[in-house]
Length: 446
Ligand code: SUG
Image 1 (cartoon, protein in one colour):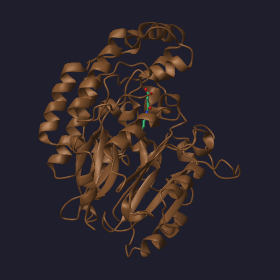
Image 2 (cartoon, protein in one colour):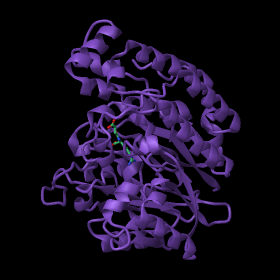
Image 3 (cartoon, helix red, strand yellow):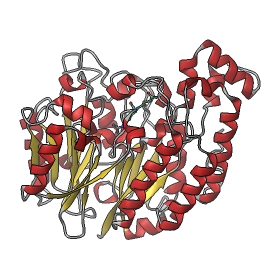
């Protein structure tokens, strides 16, 4: 069946800020409390969407979430009027106020895990919202993510949207950031690779020592079960715990796949040989040969990979079958990585073009091109059945740029989160956005 891969990019919300909330994510920690520019962040993300849509790639937008998260603040004892809640939270725990204000839903690779209909037992596309329970500021995103996905993919003849897994460390789940699908064509059967950083019920399994492993094997297995995946086409692989300890908090910081290509760093997996063998065997079942592009440590160190986000790139298949690598401009600024990339495109391999973007605002919180998008492979019938108002067009781009200009600040620092006016601005912005996208009631969380 013919199918296309849509990228649903997160629209950066108006409260984008740097709060140092993600222990284990080097960029988040090093930019703590610096001033952010939400307007620039949103425009950088929109520019990526527009450019890729203009190049003919299927592109859609995922709306931001309501901030501040008053539900969270009230549940932990900050009561009174909204202004009182904000003032008290700022006084007593500015870091928790920052959690309630985080624009982290912009990284939609963490919104859900998606299995296209060609892979699932009932021929529907399955989505499971990620519980993101490793970090307070992300732990409630799944409530709105589930709601948003159900609004976008409402037709139950085509789509199944599962609620997040139980929010406990045994089921720690970070969504598509630890999930890659390989296939000959997007519409054909694929092989789904789930990577995990720890095993809750096997203390002898590899696990990092310094930074948290956010994804558990148990969570990955639960998702494969929920989506009804065929065991012969499903691979579970342990991340290398040593690289988690060097800042690889999601597998998509050190590997990316598309079609039959796996682009990865030598140190990405605990047992590289076993992962490649399992992928090769599983892919043989769908008459596809794995093309592994391995980057050696002596060419690009793990430190350079983390600093440049070389692997947090998007690998996109172009109409002529060749692939483009969508990279952040930091890759061009890192000498080892820039040199490697020159060789990569000249090598005659599957990747023959680099498309780079300035995503500095998101990068400073550890979010590159791949973090900002959720991949959803859809058949023509599924595309027709999904909500149309989020598909990126020139007209939608222009409307969203004007909307950002109207509501977004160009400077936000920690003290601004105490300003009740900011909460009002965020709420007015999202109210108008739900109208622009044709999604009334999107933010009516009970
Ligand atoms: O979960 N950063 C995000 C970055 C997510 C990147 N996503 C993928 N790799 N797919 C995180 O660590 C930082 C927020 C702050 O510190 O203000 C943050 O949440």
